[in-house]
Length: 96
Length: 493
Image (cartoon, rainbow over all chains, first blue to last red; front, side):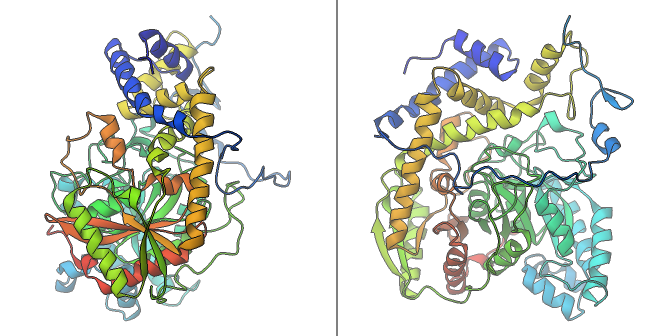
């Protein structure tokens, strides 16, 4: 396969919401290109008409009764927020 | 501490042996727990197996266990009063849970995961949280944000990973049983490198509720122990049908120890030749061949077989697992829990920064790999293709189990390597999992037992069974254990 470009890495970083330094981006480009190169042999496997396997238990969507259950304790949950205001989680501005 | 407790035989005894001492009133759970906590304090500077130790909670649990063992309250279980460790990717109510990542430092779960709840209900004494590769991504425990774990057999070497703390803790006698998670070998490979028993049950037998998700279609919880019998007992405690995990299989469950004395006479055991990879350490190969001879002497019919798609398993795994990881780890945004970045200009920048600073190199690499494999234009070539080959790998195993009761392979192509030796080359590191990964792809049960020594380091022997053939691999492993004394070797620590 063709080596990834710096632009490819920047695109993936945007999709993944991860900020990389310039040095990290270049390392990532080289390493991903190397790893993906090892995977190229997969294209040699004949998979015509083969159904994909998502997981191995063959169970389908499992539904439960729509019944109210006791919720988690609000304070137990909110104590983990890096920034909070009373019973709210505070976030940085979404719209500027 | 009594002289009896100071004897290293105590630290290396099995959970069943400890339970017999409880029943004979030779020792109480509180005494055993204090002894473990002392040993942890003494060994942690050289091992780093634990991220968090919880002495007060452990003593409180041991006190309750002693009452139960003395006949008040509920009937004791096989694990009542037994000091155990759980990997730090198991959610534990009110006890910090980090997955060895900076992004989760300080995170206090508001609930117990199902496996932890079942352990507590069984009366097990949880000593603390085991070190691991960050988010269980790694094969050497070197990617932990809390520093590497050192192998008790040689502290310059890795314990394997990702359940490195669990394996080192059991091998060094810091706990009697540890619980880990296995996505591509993360229980079995460290068990092999540290000379202990480690089992990945059939996918779906142990609830993943409260296990910090990595690759959801591959992740499975299982025990690391000093005997196969302890492994079966531990599995009996943590396996259940859990409505909170939609992939949890429906009851009824076997008693996993039911066939443990069944032996291997007449059992058909296949040796897939593709697992004897080029570059396998000569000592590992020799130990494996000796183990095959042992199994034959015990009456098993050993024959070579071929699983040609094994050569593609690594690629399938390193597409599927990172793809699932990239989705699972999207929840870590530094808003609701974990380490946030508060000085950012806007919400998006805060998330970019929290994830950029909070995740380590290997986790970022896998998120990038998975994001790429799932992205527009590449999905069919990578993710869908890998899932189709996954179907073919499953079929190949299904066909093999028409002929064989179990398969046997080395657990890892090498013994424990030096800290720092492989961490710079991600693909070399991935190659460590070559013998364990296909099992997760197909959701099969598999157990690694001590299977020899090479240059003073433990070698693991892996049995693989058909889906729900957990009792079969336990039976074969138990018979091998009875016939050998590798499990009686312990590190001089």
